[in-house]
Image (cartoon, rainbow, N blue to C red; front, side):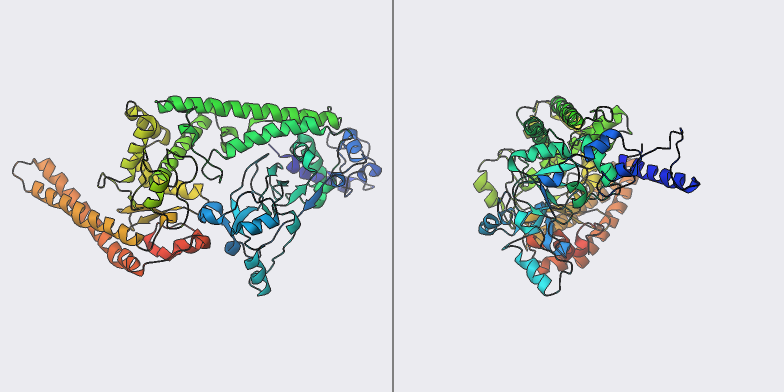
Length: 601
């Protein structure tokens, strides 16, 4: 299906061809459906005078009204850092104590003493609320950026729009190949160059948000912004309806924003994430599949309610602009921008069964990710929100907050991830323990099968093959759990970077030596005895010899990994600073860590 602005460009090409074929180089009165007649005077009613020959009389009439968006709003560009890698992060990278959420003025941001603040950089197609993951170094009014610019270290630095920073506002995704989308920004954000803002009267902010997310506004943009970039001047020039009912549209927007906010904060990549919906009392059942069914019903209701409200919103503005013959209020499901809506998440090209399977699998991945967070003490079943999220925090810090945890955090911040039950704190064993505690012992086996069926594989295979890739993707190539991994993956151990200390690599080394020198060699000795045992069958002896050969290869791999990589690194006692970000810290560990394209040294 051709998008609205793509269709605009297609009509433009038809117009140019028509003009080139005309003897007098002008339109002729014809009846072909691809030809139109329009007065040049009508074109002048649309800002920029585009040759919008296909526009209806209602569209021209709307553009001919007295009021423009700029009469009641002001639009502002934001900061250009000049060096995004140096001054911007994703929020989960830094210590939470250095991050300030919700400062309502430049002065309150300054007084907070924080270094990092929410940074609006635009984002993908999402309406009403969400996409807040980026942060900016704005300590003391961006002192580091200002000084770097003076030294010529950040060419292109511009401190635009600073008077509007931290104030509630409306933003939009400026560069988009699809439909426009506008979102509410609550207090606390620094505006970015591609995350500009629309300042409105406080009492009318949500009403304007309703207008901007209506299909009437999208239709107007087809004429003023036919390219992929929606800029400030194009938005400013769009018309306001003669009778703009602030209260009616604002009331609809409140509900839409709340639905978007509930959805966005249900995932751990939101800084306002509290806990996983699957384990909340209102959803949790002893049987996990029943829990999921209950949650899925809630999500379906949310999606349909947002669809109903968006159609009501469209109806308000279709009537306000008298565009009943031009537009209908319907909104397809794939434009209902909730993460829990599979039509939006995965597109409409798949069947309902395929969409449901994808949503279920992702929900189980969310459960596994949350369980790993509980293993490391980032989260806890006993207390909502972040628990350990500052640099170098320890198990003692955890126990001060949760003295008697139902599912305790790992003590040494190293969780082995191996192909077998070699350690009692192996990640697969810990997940099984989490499942028992979170949903009860009675239906544990059934619940584990439900998880594995949704993931399409045994839980241990998921951890070994897929978990880390999923984690890196979830956290936008800025992972907070780091995977120490030997070249062929025979040894893997996960750590939580916020709990990292210079001795952590030494602890990983201890696990490696225990696995190699104690467990694998003990297994090898057992197999060697079996291979020469008079009581063993020939089949058992052959199988034992094959496993011995495999263990020998593994031992050779791990010897090299210890000697050449892990031991030298452990002796270095590497220091990290979370404020430097994952992109700086991850490469310090070289070949000890799992390679991530674009991140590893």
